Structures are given as structure tokens and as C-alpha cells.
Image 1 (cartoon, one colour):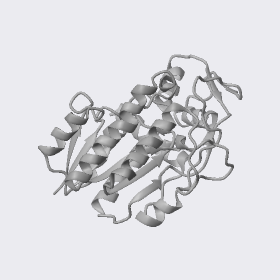
Image 2 (image 1 turned 180 degrees about the vertical axis):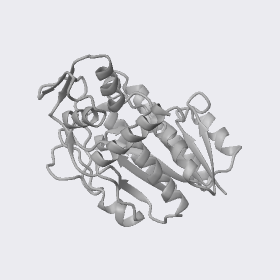
Image 3 (image 1 turned 90 degrees about the vertical axis):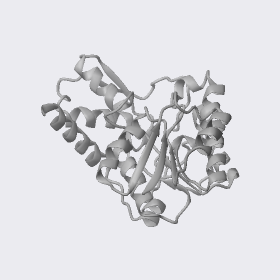
Image 4 (image 1 turned 60 degrees about the vertical axis):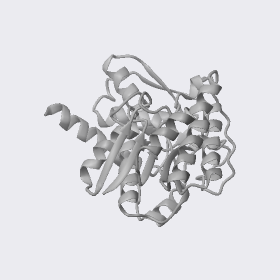
Length: 289
């Protein structure tokens, strides 16, 4: 029975992992919240790992507020860089395989073709810089690891673009969405399932991999599809803009090339529109029941 620690239990990805685990046997997952284990506290991390035995640690704990990170740099780096370092060092010490979630924001967005794992990183905001430092700390630790960069993560859980669009639509509020950025919306349920497939498959491949759904979209395209698939497009107050101002800079282009991931693990991600449609279908079915 594989013993798996999942940090950041209150986050959307951890909740999706908990759901996905219902489809697998042969694993026991241990979910911990930040209150139970603050990964930025090196002493707490050391004690936690010392008293337990795990085969894998799936680190979903992160500081994810891109805007606030610009004014809370220390907090972002405390979790995304130093916290990750603490977890990686513990995994190295106890022979645990670390699966860590990173981001497309480690890139500057100046390319016009999908980013591969070998492309030069150059984050343009504090959040991206803190996540890149976390990647570097994992590599420096020498622990057995798999870093999964993903993009535009959403799900039925928590505060994310998908739920924000649905909330605005239900409240009749106008939505003005940018067309300036091109990337790939990624269903956290798909990422969760991919992670557990890798764990159960005892995959030998390690290092950095890109995982996202397939295709491309602007944030406006994503909003339009959410409203279309939920039957709210006709009555929605949706408008596009190419001058949506934000405090933090964002990559204008951040599509990830997932070829290496698919070749290594035999998993081909769904097209983003297909995955979004499936999530909407499942959610509507649950609400009816």
C-alpha cells in the first residue's frame, strides 16, 4: 500500500486529488492543511516527516495570489521557495519521491510557439520568480523528484476563473475579459488524475515536465466557453478588452508543450474545451441530484 502525503489540503488541486483517488486502490493518502503543516516552517516540516513514513509527497501547497505577491514578496518566497526547499530536503533525507506543482509563469511569454522544458526561464512577476526558485531548490536538494509545470488551473473548487465567471453570470454582473494573454486552461481534475496514474504506474521518469490540457485560448475565449457550456452566454454581459490593467505583469503567451510528458507517461491530455465541457456536465448532474 503506497503511502502518499498531500500538502495544501484546502486547495483546489488537493481536493481534486482526493476525488480522483476514489478511482484507485493500493494507495493511502494523507492530506494536511497549512494549519496542520506550514511548509515554510523548517522545524515543523522536519518533525512531520521524521514521525511518519511516506513513499510520495505531492506538494500542492503554494502562495498563488499573483497580484498580491507583488506587494507580499517575502510571503510568496517563504512558501513557494523556502517552503519547497524544506519539503525537498525532507524528501531527500527519508528517500521520498517528491511530486511538485509549478507554473507556466516561470516563462516571460516572448515566444510564439509552445514552451518546452528546455526553454530558458525568465519570470516577469514575483509569483513566477518564487515558483522558479522553488524548482531550483528541489533540484539542488538532490531528492528524487517530478516537477509538473501547469497553466491556468481551474476546477469546481475554490477561487478560480471558472467559478468567478459563473458567479458574475449568476449575479448579472458585467464581465470584461482580456484578449491580451494566450495560454491553455487546465482542468485540475485532469492534473490530479495524471498525478495518481504516475504514482500507481511506478514511473521511472523524473525531472521537469509540462502538463496542461491541449489547444490554446485567451482568457476571453475561456470565459465565453464557460458561459456557452453552462447555457448562459446569450444573457451574459460579456465584453472583451486588450487593455486590462493588472498590478503584476503576465506572460502574453504561455502555452506549454506537453509532448515530453505524454511520451514519458503514456498520458495524452484532453483538449481544453472537451475537458471543460465534461466538468460542466458533471457539475450540472450533481446539482440535479
